[in-house]
Length: 469
Ligand SMILES: Cc1cc2nc3c(=O)[nH]c(=O)nc-3n(C[C@H](O)[C@H](O)[C@H](O)COP(=O)(O)OP(=O)(O)OC[C@H]3O[C@@H](n4cnc5c(N)ncnc54)[C@H](O)[C@@H]3O)c2cc1C
Image (cartoon, rainbow, N blue to C red; front, side):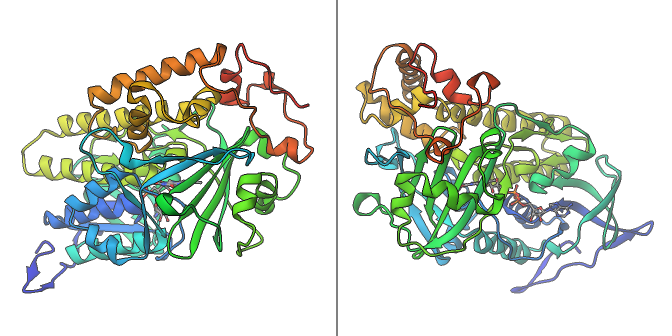
């Protein structure tokens, strides 16, 4: 019996046993959004699915802000109503500013996007969101085991996956790696590669009493850009705001306080964020995550798929992670269903999956490299441009690249990139001296020649150099 329904109740078949191994159709490592969504789709298609996670749920995760494409996917999966029932904040745009506090943040409302597309999304506490996805996948028939991890991989091939979990040996026809930054398969195949130029450390916490944008900007996420770092302030429910800072690892080493106190140190030196946090309450220490970008390409092979962060991690500035996790969870599980139903060959399924993940990853990396480019940042905060270029930029900031970029957005985005290049040498908009947290804290910056002042180094060609003064 394969997870079949009896009346309103679900009967989950006890796993078969093959040569001492529990037998499943698909085993999934990791119960985050990418793993749970894959489990949901597979279980709905009648597959016997086992999901193991080494942690107990609900558990904290950072990554609380979605892209509009997440709404599209969750609506298709019939899950948007469940999201609506949870405490969340409707996100209708962003505000972006340099952190010096001298200029008001610029609003980037999703309503300005070109075309007939979803113009809002949501921010949510991940412990609640991830648990809801686990509950829905369980209702569909997937079996979850928490505090159970993978001890060793014996064999991986389609129809013959054998692994050893802490709870015992398991065999399956397919394995999906949804283990997040643990990258179980990427490490097993030794394919995980760090991406140069995106070696960051993040310091973050949840606070109450953070002053939020209001009026037309209610629910907007706020980004504050500094020379060696950027901050996020993301309202996740009526009271709580997620606040974090991402610092280049070379600069992070120079912050003269322990890692778990660096968020407060950075906030004190960023006038915009310090002002918003004047009446905030929260922990005095912070959490720390290294968010080095990496890829584990190839993303699929004989009997296996990597989804979400287990496939690749991209710098968090574009809030892509969870939406990509849901997208890839759906894409991988649907391919397994199609292969098993004989509607697609395994080779074609792997190839098209790899192409999709590669395209999305490359597309977002291209967008992210702009954010770290000072010339682009100056254009971004300068208000409206000609020919509706700024509206096309909103489409891109909202991550509307999943189903391809329409021509009217694409050419305007290209034009924006031209403006960015021209603005390096000749003023298209006001040139703005970036605010440095380290300099504000009396700490000398590393030499620009060390190559760590990423976008700024690129953005400073032909410009007065922003050296310590
Ligand atoms: C600083 C920062 C800010 C971010 N901000 C955003 C944001 O605003 N918006 C956004 O969309 N994304 C954001 N992200 C990214 C987001 O957190 C991730 O992309 C997202 O959590 C990926 O989901 P996932 O299901 O792939 O992995 P995860 O949510 O990490 O889940 C993986 C699961 O696998 C389990 N696991 C790991 N190893 C094993 C093992 N050996 N055996 C069993 N289980 C295992 C873990 O316990 C975990 O529960 C941010 C990331 C960082 C670092």
